[in-house]
Length: 193
Image (cartoon, one colour):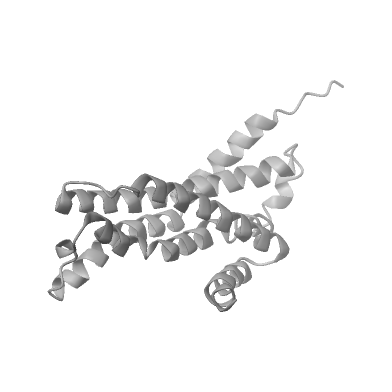
């Protein structure tokens, strides 16, 4: 019997594609996109309704800073949604046990899931920055000077949070425990420390 060589790159691509399709078809991606789209609009609309227009601020940078202050919360919510149970869900739903009977390497599974979650969170951040850019350009006819570097650093911090989320998820047994542990750690423990 001749053994066929396992194509790890193809496994990696398949896992990314499957996970990303799972995100798109599920409620998590829809909720995160709605949050990323509506939040900048609400940040602008609510002070305007209270007759304190954000567009009256001195510069486009001050205008953008108002929106970027919400970014850390958006990153934590997105990472919790996409990375909180990425590893646990396969074993909680018993699909992971059928995966390992196939010739799929664990590293392809781990890095494929991480890449798919990274892509999903980057799309959510991209939508947030596109809405911010549109509002900035509409009111000031220019974009903030550090907008691209801000997006780059937001993506880097998201990857760091996502890796911590995967590490927490690898030690726990249930999805809800993983969500609670990650949220508790970043909302209560780290601000106190």
